[in-house]
Structures are given as C-alpha cells and as structure tokens.
Image (cartoon, rainbow, N blue to C red; front, side, top):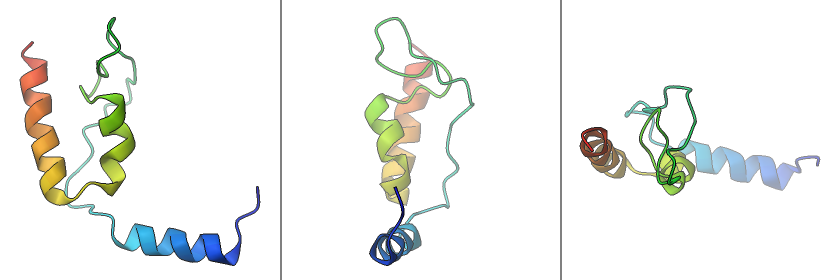
Length: 73
C-alpha cells in the first residue's frame, strides 16, 4: 500500500499529539500469560498495548499504576 499525501498529513497530525513524556513499559518479551489476559513482560493487556500511543499522559500514568498491581498477583 502506498501512502497518499492525505495519509501522510493525517499521520503527522496524529503524531504531533502523541504524548512521549511517559516511557513505554515494554520489555520486548511480548508473551501472554496462560489466560492471555496480559503480557508477561510489561503486564499490559492487549487493549492497553494497542492504545498506548494514543493515551494521554494521565492515562499512561494510570496504566502504569495498574501494571504495578498486576505484578503483585
């Protein structure tokens, strides 16, 4: 698929809004637990993994708090 000028403009607009102040918790393990609830490397759900790049700073911080709790389970 070839990106059109419209696609490129949309990409730039989206990526200008991306919050990069909170580092991704990814550990490059990318394997799911036996129930496939969350990644055993970073403890994020599939939905959290997909949404990370569009989350606000506040949402990312909330997610990181959830991850810390999951590590204790």
